[in-house]
Image 1: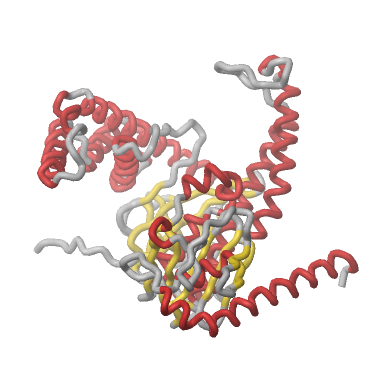
Image 2: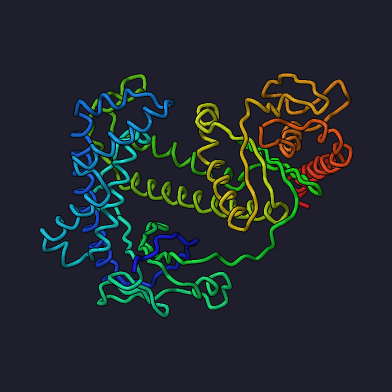
Length: 471
């Protein structure tokens, strides 16, 4: 009988573990074993890919056309032959990882075979990403850096059962589960595919968690909406336009507040670093080139810990805000359309804002959620649609970035981001805007857009009163 390789839908439940000092020491020791094995597989993978790249066949293959069907087939066959010849495959690296584990008595005693195979696969994918030029380099894990551990099933080495996580059947860790958490109780009724052990640093202290990879779909507190919605996401704002509702708001506003404190901490760290290492800087304050040995004071280490904690808060708050905003959109929409933006170009122009708010991560989360519930999500190119320049009367006019209102000679006046989101609803599969349909529905939806602007003005007045009079 042949086992089925069909993939089933999955979701993750993260549960905190109750640990004492001795248990934490054991977990960190297991992680260090995993780090050594991962680095060994990473080094072996690099050795094999460099051997492939030094061959004459490889150099001839990379020069072949990527558009011709004959050349594409030839490229595929050549790369397959090179990978097999030099044993650069997932299975081969797994085999190397297993041999490395068995040759080290210490690692063999502490890590299971499935965990070693997963670490080997992770190293292979990292090298493969480097080979495909999707990464500039691979990164070896430093000593003391935590490496997550995971198995292939819920039967060996790392398992979960009845509120406890078992490691090697000798260490049992209590899971801190809230019995009133409906989401978690729903999750625990599903089949566990495998478990993953991770670590987070919270306020300078280690916290350990188990991630249960579960079969099925997570618990949902809402039903998917039925409207068609257009989105326009900028570096700092998000515009949402549906049939009954429109919204324009600052994207991840709470993250900006935390980031202001983080900037203050960064400046403080820089002053302390300069005070501790005056020989590393020129007379004009510019850092000298070359390798340096840095001196760190106790106050600098304390400030660095504060910086790490703020970075963790930014990450957690951003994830919560993305989840909240995606859920609000999905309660309204079953079909979502938005422009496919170049986030590399965004990073060049608005690097800090993009780094903090992560719009690409937001869209990936939105796409995953809406498609999991049977909805549709589509991104279309900006070149053929030009939403920010187009009016539904057919006129096309370029606007400077600082022009935030769409004002056309035909009489249409609308906030620029909202109007782009409005037009996004009418982009067809051929990536063309159906202007006749947009013009037909403009009278109805213009009221929705105007209501959104009125609400924003009222909120602005309320905030001003609160900041001035405290009421």
